[in-house]
Image 1 (cartoon, one colour):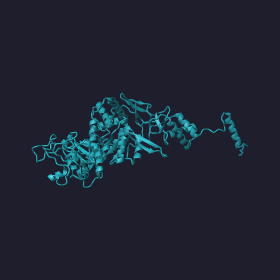
Image 2 (tube, helix red, strand yellow):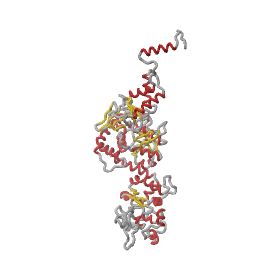
Image 3 (cartoon, rainbow, N blue to C red):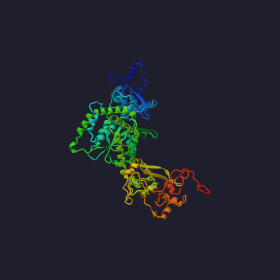
Image 4 (cartoon, rainbow, N blue to C red):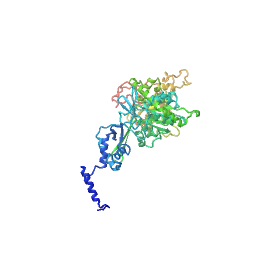
Amino acid sequence: MTLRTNGTTTADITDLAKKIVAGNGIDPDKKGPSQATQLAALARERYELFMSDDGRPYGVTIGGPNLALPLRGKAGLRSQLARQFADTNNGTVPSQSALADAMTVLEGVAALADPRTPQLRVARHAERIIIDLGTSDGRCVAVDENGWQRLPASPVVFRRSGAMKPLPAPISNGDGLAALRTLLNTTDEGFQLLAAWLVAAFIPDLPHPILAFRGEQGTGKSKGAAMVIGIIDPSGAPKRTAPRDLKSWAVQAFNSWAICLDNVSTVPDWLSDALCRAVTGDGIVDRALYTDDDVVVLEFRRVLAMTTIDAGALAGDLAERLLTIELQLIPDHKRREEAELDQAYADAHPAILASLFDLLAKVLKALPDVELTERPRMADFARVLAAVDQVTGWHTLDSYRATAADAVADVLDGEPFAQAVVDLVDKAGPDSLTLTASQLLEGVATPDKLPKKWPKDPTRAGGQLKRLAPALRTIGIEVDDSQRGPKPKKQRLYKLTASPERRCETASPASPAAPQTPVTCENRGDASATPVASPLPVRGDAGTAEGDAALFPASPHDTASDLQRYDQGDTGTAGDAEMQHLSNPTPECTACHLPLDSTLAAYGETTHPGCDPVPAPNSPTKRA
């Protein structure tokens, strides 16, 4: 017992406090609710809780902006709840354990609600496109076929990230696209294609090609890319270096609508594949923090850009997703200081957005009536370009096709094996080549020092040819691997065919030995007019009757020695007869009477695989 100076004790003070509390109808022996309980009750009172489709809990302020605050992590609803608790409890700060316990309860409440997916910067809502301006009060812009308007609140739930900055409110103040044109040093054709890409960047539900600013040093690639990305999705880091691994890339892509990789010289295979997936839609699964069996999913489809000097270093599938804008060298007397350029860009940004939204509204109105007779690889984007051309009179679709073809050609120029295959097909003339992977690897011109990507065996040669097939098709060379060789090996055969247009481009003058018959696209395939040499070197003397007899056995049966030589890709065997351009009539299958592949005929086969053989006259048995 402690005595006070006035003669009272602490026990007396405690009894007095209990009497006062009891006099107000409160049980003095009953403890109040814990901090965790108060936090959970406060959150359920002020926030609408739900779980996203990928399993992330969020809360939206009731009666406030339609912004999703994540429950996990120290930013978001957790910090907001701590501040509100302190405001309602005379500045008392909740403990970290109380916050953690409250978050666990709130996650369980969110799991019971219907799942929703918060959008990032751009979203589709019915017939309108909603663009989040990124302001704290949740303002947005809605665009439909009738025009655009600013809204005080978004009808779509958006989420924010630390990488995002606000967009300025669009203002119709003159021609914003003309103002943007003065900031970029490209051609009129290139600028029109860029403007069409910017319009498509605000359409969320389609794949967007990767914008590639290409040019030599001093063309303003990095600054131009930063301005273009800032028009769509401003960020504190508009230009970024290539990520070091897949996880760091997924985190960047998940938290930004538009991303620019600056000064790309080489792209690792894993990053090339990741960029391709980000164009069409990707999802990365990772283990959740502090768990053994729980996972988190990062889903995204993004608008991407890059700056590069050499696009030939890119993989073929990535090059097919590029939209290349060539930048011109800036003369010294026209170069502007960065502060001046930044101020001009900031002043023009609201008008640029207004002009883009005007054009977007016209495109949305024209899109339902646009039909493409031929669809390139990025067909959805090509349809948007066709709508842009319809309402503006531009020719962006033709420009896009031309830039796509140039990008693929650059990739082929950087692939030594692809160049060797192209040379092999061009030397073959009008006839197609049908050969195995081992024959292909032996038939192409091999460099003295093998490049890094040169296939080391027939299996890799076949796989690389399959990967190069789309790029080869772009320059007029078809690759068909649906055929199989004769039994019992049934090796895969690759048929390489040059298009008539490519044959015309690569046609050579007539040989001096036959000047009376000029070679044209019409008679180039006529072996009687102009003999064509074999595209592959032939081992041994195949020009004599004895050599011919060795190459074309009379027996229809495949002997073990024949199969062994065919399997090894020996150009002196019957397997090379497919690549000999003969003037003999095409043989027919004795069962179905359709043309018989020359490889089967040279190997003594008389029927297609799968057709029932017809026994020869006076033959007592039927060949199996």
